[in-house]
Image (cartoon, rainbow, N blue to C red; front, top):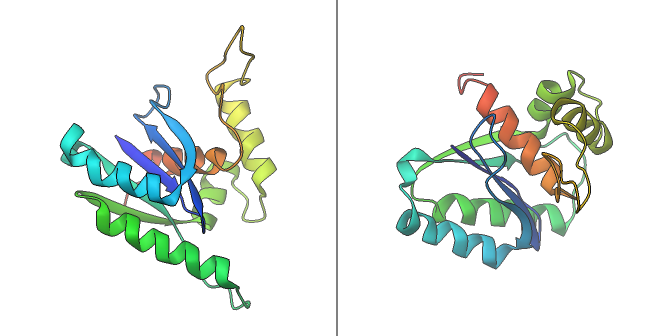
Length: 153
């Protein structure tokens, strides 16, 4: 079972995923709330059954601003707060796994997930992905990639 986090400088998207089943829970929350969720997880479930997957920040030789450094800071705090196994997966690996193209954008990833799992649906007729929005798409793509990709890659 996987808990995937797409970290951000002030808030992060997260998704619990058990493979082909629906994401158990997902959301977008302030980083302090995500940190608390990670600290409490070992008390509410067995952490050895879960793997924390965090999107790894990578340098591509370009200048970056404070937001990137804040995101890296929070990624480290999430890693430290977790009581079990942690995997770091770079965004490029997610793009290649989900879209088979290193140039894929967020819209391409969202479209590939919709093609795979079906339409999100409506409130009256929710689909498999109902309620997934904004950065949660990235967290879900990260979870799917981690589930389907051996750790040795």
